[in-house]
Image (tube, rainbow over all chains, first blue to last red; front, side, top):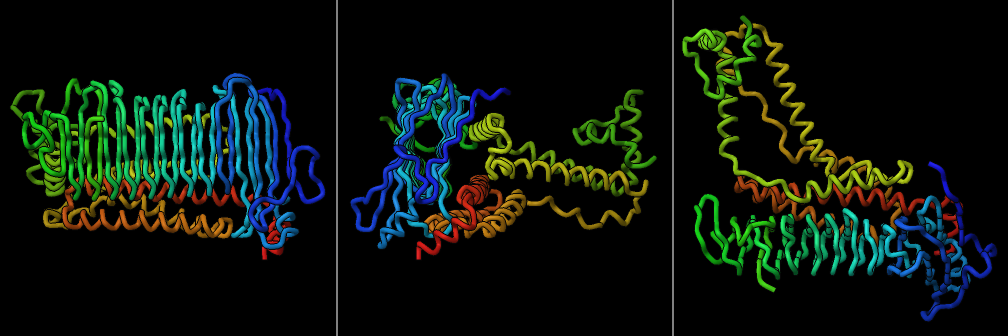
Length: 308
Length: 237
């Protein structure tokens, strides 16, 4: 494949080799904190790709109306000795690589375990650019973008009014994953000790999973949609609006299972109409036209299906 | 005739077919005669009949949406990226343990079948009381192997991650270990409980994914030269 163009900007190098205009060192508000701003404007043609890897710092990404990609970053280092802080600041590299209608940003830090630096990003991308972000310590907030994958370890993920051509994934380890107004063919949301919340989103397939946190889905179900919501020790909650019927398999090992919808039950207990669970820990049956499939599972958490 | 020469009618027999005396049932009739004097085939028919019965009693399970979501997302992601850009974690996709589990099951089944075929033509009658074949590996064994390998890899790259990140990962691995322990305890009390089994596999699956991410994170963090790292270490004192 022919490369249209390749530009590599190594925008932060060692002290004394800073490109003028790109970065502005200054003393931050905190005692011993030194900051440096970085700005870059790039371009993506239709349906480009944007990929960011950042170790520490918060990330805000918003879809813009044009074709520009604006990258605003603030590098921070906090040390009692400001000279040392400034020298450490210059060791944080932000690399922007443009090639073949794709922009890759990488931040790299020196290896000592407790490096006292971070980079906060504020980014605008074209609305049709496919966005992937991987962070370690820091939150990710994305609005209006075409999302592909968002991952962080200890921060939260907030995804608002986004879309995906096919698959959208968002995963955290200790943080919460909150999604509002996401439209995609398939959505996968995971966290270990945080919560997962999905609000007014549309997908043919949704998988939302937490281990110790809660999992909540609020909104309409898609006809023929398949929803799998799982938590080990957290609760699983559905707050449904609209008239889409569903086929539900809800099981908790030691928690309760409850539905506000009249479920036509099936299984070993036989068929029958009734409100609520066939047993306190399981519901298997259908409601309405049964066009959506719900697989709800908890180990010690409880499961509830209610009306919004 | 040897045991393996009746492979073609073994399945029909287990499914309930019996010789009726018609010419078309000659093979089946021959197998019935062989079966009457062959302890090994009797044991095999008993095993297969038992497995068939157990399978028939299983509840129907709908494939979970996450299965396709994960497979499709993984395929899409890998196809989109050139190989040199793929993080190490992509080398261990999160559904890999499932594939390993399936492969292992097929391997065990194949090995059992081959062993049966390679036995002497007529086993002695005393084989009737022979001990049963070892049971297939539990479903969690492939996960344990993957976890052991990833833990080793993650430990070797531990120095690349900062203390806060390592602490968060450690805390969450502890959360997962607790979930695994609880599921195992539930299975010990109720070995046939499908929910406990699923919870165990969910927790193992998540632990594999977290360890994969840990390895990938360490690779992300480990991008600076030793010289820069040394200078930073001095300044960070």
